[in-house]
Image 1 (tube, helix red, strand yellow):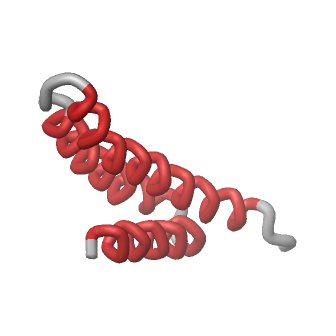
Image 2 (cartoon, one colour):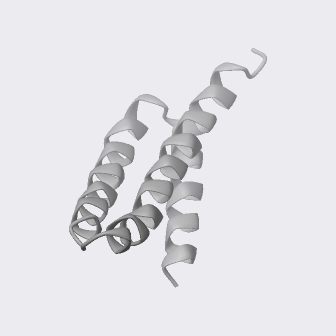
Length: 80
């Protein structure tokens, strides 16, 4: 269920970044901040469990950043 939510957020951010690139930064940073909180909370588990619990949040944060930047890059590469 969480994977579907992250995919939906990435799609929404990519579309938002394509149509209104400057306004897409705030939702992207908010989403990354929220995922960062989850990553930091998960990393407080002892030993290898900390890395295991924080990894999904780190990879989701990277995916959100990539989808936003891909939308903005596609917008600027459009022929005029």
